[in-house]
Length: 316
Image (cartoon, rainbow, N blue to C red; front, side, top):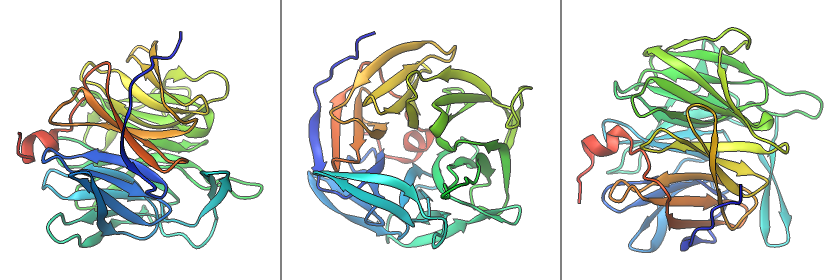
């Protein structure tokens, strides 16, 4: 099917290597700059630094208490230049410090929530999503060595990080994007290097139903063609999964039944993530990391707005 062509408007440019957009109901847009080790803020068209996290803030989510949680992959990333583009060449296998952090919105203070599960240090935490009970699920991408690779997986934690466990492990080619269905009963995650979208039934906080056939117990929803890579994802109000798909430079829209229902073109080969505006769920913000831009567009279907935004943020 031919990709849908949208009209994109610029939001921010020359902002490092942006990912993890998060739109708040007061009109603020936050996003992580992986290369700069900061979370940036856009208000009134002006870009500023919201918090200095260090490492590489790879995923952002609004917690039920109104704070911002960060999936920090720990840094030690490898970078190169291709003309005007910044290219992420993966990770170093030493010198990193992967963790989940909490940012106080009033002060910008950054607090470490967790950095290990069952005594094992985390490798490259990528993204996270909150459940309505205040706990969160998160992904670890793993790291590539010269001749080896550490596995990724999906994890769960209580909101304060006091209790955490692996719930879908190993995901050999790296767990990247993560999201919940509108009713919270299905958890989705992408396997980045393999181009696969997996799903699990959520049975209880921190417990997933496992389907036989894979060590991580996931149900295969969709396999991307042409050796494409599946980065971060969001879910629409109708339950479709919208996935940043590289190297074709599109967002793949996949139904819960595994049907590719649309592809949406972007102005770059490597889009990394998107979020929906809680004030206007038909508006999406997109990060284009290699060209250091954030853009927005009217989206073909409204996005699912996280419950914390609806419950804790003022509506305009």
